Image 1 (cartoon, rainbow, N blue to C red):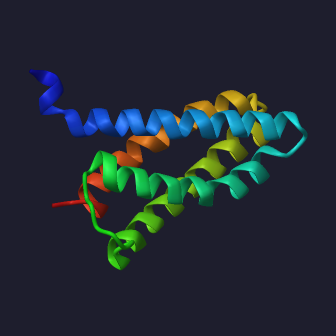
Image 2: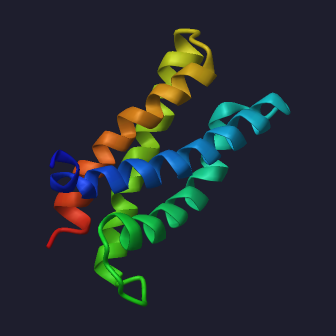
Length: 128
């Protein structure tokens, strides 16, 4: 069955949808309250990185180490820094320079960055 062949990817999607849905709702609430989109992303990103590491380590890639495992966590942080700068770049270019609505830019960037992060985590961070 196809599901069992790709169950790790499906776990990644489920964990990602849960975390990103919550994060996107918080993003909308804060930007609607008057905060600038780039500021919201900068404040919320570190929190979502830690939540994502703990969730993906245990649920997606099924690694059960008790500690944060220095090198694994370091590679994870580096990948998320790349993701963070991609997010800022997309918001800056598409919203600030080209005038697209930030809500839509952020929504699209979530999916683009999620694909980048899955491939990177599978091959760099949580590789077997």
